[in-house]
Every structure is written in C-alpha cells, then in structure tokens.
Length: 196
Image 1 (tube, rainbow, N blue to C red):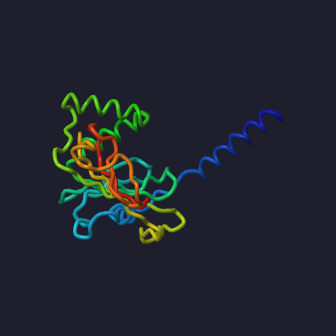
Image 2: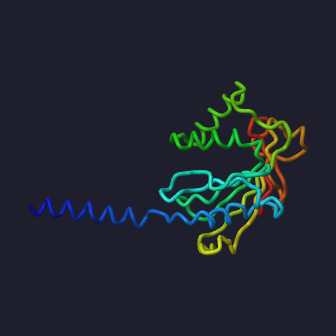
Image 3: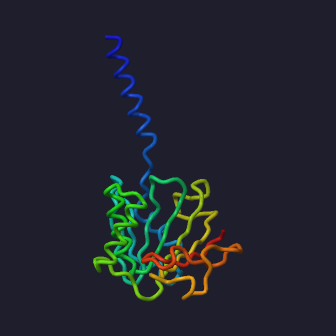
C-alpha cells in the first residue's frame, strides 16, 4: 500500500512539473504583433502570419496580401525569435517545418530537401530572396504588447548555388556586421548579415 501511494504521489509530482514547464500560448493578436516585428513597416499589415492556437498547434493566424510570410515565436524554445521571409521561399520553409514535425534533425532535413531540390520537387527562387529575423531575451519581452526591448536584427538573403567566386563574399565574416556567404555552392547558399 505504501509503495502504491508513493507511486501515485510521484506521478502527481511529474504531472505538476510538466504543467509548469508547458509554455504559455499568447493571444493571436499579440503573436501577430510580435511576428511582424522584423518586417519593413510598410509590409507588416499585409504579411501572412503563422503561429500557435490555444492547444499549441502550428496554424495560420492571418492570411496575407503581400509577398511576406512571418513566423510567430515558438513558445517551446528559449528566448524570443521571429522571422519574415519572401513568399518565394515558402516551399523550402514549409518542407523544413514538415520534416521537423516528423522528427528529422538538421542534417536529415538538409539531405532530404537537397535531394528534393535536385529532383525539382522543391522550387528554389532564382533571384535573391530575403529573410528578416528579430531576436532577443524573454526578460525584455512584453507579453501584453508584443514588443521586444532588447531585439536585434539578423538578415539572411537566400541565393541558391551562389559561390564565393560568383559573389566576391567571404565564407566567414572578418568584421562585425559584415555580410558573408554561408553554404556556398549549395541549394541553401545564403548571405548572412548579423549583429555579430
């Protein structure tokens, strides 16, 4: 009997701990307000926004009318990080989310998407395509307004198959904030510009 009571108390403790660890899902409008923070001012109101419903499912919070797609902060990850990207990148980004939902890791996602790009299943844009990222700490985040006090920008410009030779960019930065080319020569080649 004592063992049974101990077991029940242990389960109850685990349940309470799991509930305490579950992140809060913010109201739809606050998620949208935060998701569009990285976007240019004139594009914020027309951007399509993905976020989370009351049960934590990833859903469309607002349909868009322009060429930007924005992602709300993932409540299950530390810190605050939101991004907006060109709608031309949506097939690539959406496939990445699908693979992540299937439990694929970074390397697996890269290999699968690479094969699918090569096979023509995923169309990558031919011209440079922008991604805006805004990130900061939870301590500086106001959940009532969706504003981030210590936010910093990072920019990613996808240029599939671009090389160091074709762009003149280095493969790593040699000064703070300078642009550099990551994954040169691959389907996910992109120019990084960040605060680091």
